[in-house]
Amino acid sequence: MKNLLPRLFAVTTFMLLFSLTIQAGVDTSALLVKTAQGLVKGTTSQGICIWKGIPYAKAPVGNLRFRDPQPADNWTGVKDATAFGPVALQMKRVLIGNEKQSEDCLFLNVWSPAADGKKRPVMVWIHGGGFVGGSGSQDLYDGAQLSKKGDLVIVSMNYRLGPLGFLYFNDLPGSKGNFDSNLGIKDQVAALKWVKENIAAFGGDPAQVTIFGESAGGISVETLMSIPATQGLFKRAIVESGPAGDVWSPVLATRLTNIFLKELNISTDSLSKLRNVPADSISTAMLRLMKAMKADPTLPKTCAPTVDGSYIPHDLLTAIQSGQSKGVDLLIGTNKDEANLFAMKRLKMAPINEEQLKPYMVRFKAEDQNKLKAAYKGYPSKSSILALITDGIFTMPSARFAELQSAHANTYMYRFDWASKPIKAVGLGACHGIELPFVFGSFNTKLGKKILLFADTKRIHELSNEIQQDWINFARTGNPNNPGTDNWKKYEPSVRTTLIFDKKNYTCTDPNCDQRKAWGTLNIFE
Image (cartoon, rainbow, N blue to C red; front, side, top):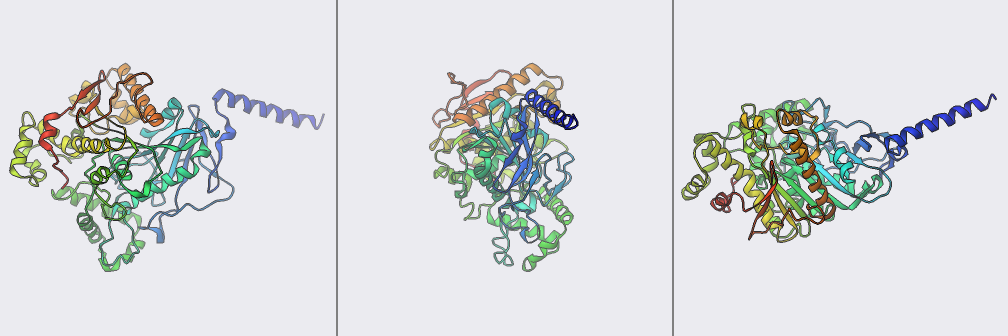
């Protein structure tokens, strides 16, 4: 009897745990996964297995600051993967949420129905934030709903931001090969290599990877499509509001790097001092650089990759035209009123009158300026100027990107037009980023709750369901249509059919036709 009680207790405990596991619909033993670096233990939520804060590269600190990412170290025992890792160092004014920030930030997160050996399609999310803010762990990007709905594996990542990720040292005399460039993009490539090597252990198929991202994440996707280093790392791509022309030339990047060095009082022949600058000082200098960029109409307003001629050999449109991403299916689109967000008083990053628009227009010939002005009804009203900026930065580069990729792979284009009356009333409309809660179903977030406010919540959830299913279909087959339907038509230069997401979805042939013809091949970023 003495020995029987412990046995009964053990059996009872086992049965209780087994019962809870069945009720949750998740095999908790599957939360322990062996990666190439060691064992990780995750958690569950909404019937989905989640692993958080997995290092995909070494901490880029000390001698690795401003150097290419290095493979993560192996570990012994079991690494706890139940809490997100620190987010990339960024200015506190752009930090979203209460996340801890650190230079030691190269972590990724995985959502999967089960680590059961099943080969599910994989979607790798790249967050936006102007390459100066944001993280892969923001609640807006919770991958549980997409994973569960589509039987997919979802991955999100952090990557280096601001000066630590996008300063350009190649043409500085003091670099001597000890400082690398385009580090934020190289971090993303390192994360994709980790996915290729490890994702099968989480129930994913490394041969069925779709990369997707919004804003800076969209530019990242376009950049990753444009460089040789990503060959074989993904099969499909989704770009949400990614301004393909918004990349730096070496001359511009060197100019901005010199401004940053001046803020730290470091000369180009003493770059080694950068290794010892406190992280807080880097954040402060970055804030000053951003203020300088904002005040100077000849400078960009945020960070970007640099077309260095080697790692990023060509501008993105030239690379796509050459067939660099031949065979990579593409789904790409923009929002109808992108620029409205940047015109808000809190940001003040977009022109709202003709005087403020001049720095964008002076690069064009007088006849081209006149064509553009004539193409926008009511010019120079605030709404017409914001429409011009929306098209110049987002719509036209995206349409051009789609046109060029359509010669090399299945390509589909959308425009997101939905906006509730309250959102329109405050001047936002279908602004930049508004589609994100619809993609992730994250309406229990700050942005999601604002969208639900005084709106037709039934249509909101219907629209979210439609977008999610389209994204899932595309990740599975390279075609966003549901089986047996053809709501989406392939984007072809002769027709330019675009799916419009609105109160009722519909297709449109060559939307913004007059404006597109007026823009031609003009590039607002040059």
